[in-house]
Image 1 (spheres, rainbow, N blue to C red):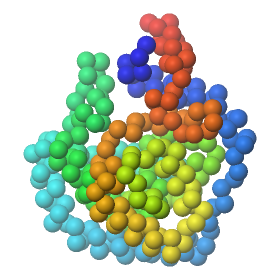
Image 2 (image 1 turned 30 degrees about the vertical axis):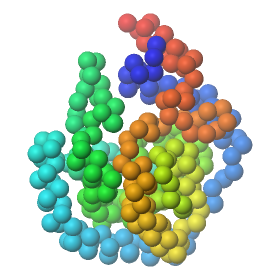
Image 3 (image 1 turned 90 degrees about the vertical axis):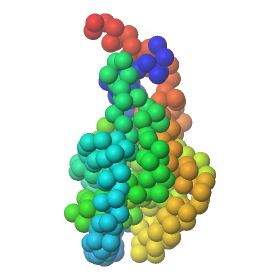
Image 4 (image 1 turned 180 degrees about the vertical axis):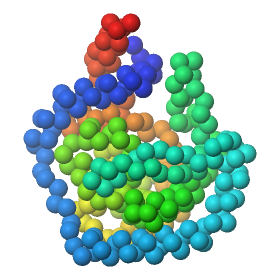
Amino acid sequence: MEKAELTKEMRWKIADYLAEDRLPKINARLEDVRIRDTVYTRYVKRMIDILVSSCALIVTLPVNLVIGLITFFDVGRPVFFRQVRIGKDAEPFEIIKFRNMRNTRDERGELLPAAQRVTKFGRFVRKTSLDELMNFWSILKGDMSLIGPRPLVPEYVHRYNKRHRQRLAVRPGLECPPRKLSNHVWTWQEQFDNDIWYVENISFLTDCRMIVNLVRFALDRKSAAARASVGRGIFMGYDLDGRAINLDGVPQEYVERVAAEMKEKE
C-alpha cells in the first residue's frame, strides 16, 4: 500500500505504533528541560500580552473586516476556521482564524492535501500572516501569548518525546521565530528544538529579540515564501535516531502492518 493511499484513521494508528515502539528508548537518553520560572514569566509577560492584544484588536478591526469580506467571496462560508489546539499544560482551546483553504475532498471523502486546497488569496494571507490577526483574541483571553511555541493539534501530544512535550509548559504564541533567517520550510525537528530553546530561555530580552526576528522573518522574501508553503506534512513521531519525522519518514513496515489490520476488520 502506498502512503498517499492511507486514510486519516490509518495515519493516526501508525503514529500510535511509532510512539509505543520508540518513545521509551528515545526518552531514556534525553535530558530534562530546564523550564524558566521568573517574575517575568509569571506576571509581566501576561500583562504585556493583555495590553498589546487589546490595542491590536482595535487597530486591526478595519483590516479584519476587509479580510473577512474577501474570504467570503474566496472560499465562501464559514469565513472563520475553528479548530481545537493544545495550550499551556496540555489544556485544549479553540483557535479562530480566517479560512484560506477550500474543503475539497477525494473520492474516499478525505480532505485533499493542504497544498491543493489553499487558494491564491490564502497563500497571500499566510505569507503576510494576516490570517493570524484573530489570534489576538486568543491572547486577550489568556489561551495564547504574543511569543511562544505554535499551538498544534491534540493528536500530536502523545507523540512528543519528553523534551518536546515541554513546549506545552508555556502558553503557545503567535510565533516562535527562528533565531536565524531561514529560506526553507522548517522541519518538525527544527521547530520543536527551537521551541524548547525558548522555554529554557524566556525573558523580556528574549521576547524583544523574538519580535524583532519575527518582523525580519516576515519582511524577508525567501523566509516569507517558506512560511507560505504548506508542504511540510503532519508530525508522525520519531525515527530511530530520535529525530521528528513526517509521513515520508515512516518505515513501510508500519504502513503494511496497519493496512493488514484494517483488511482483517473488513
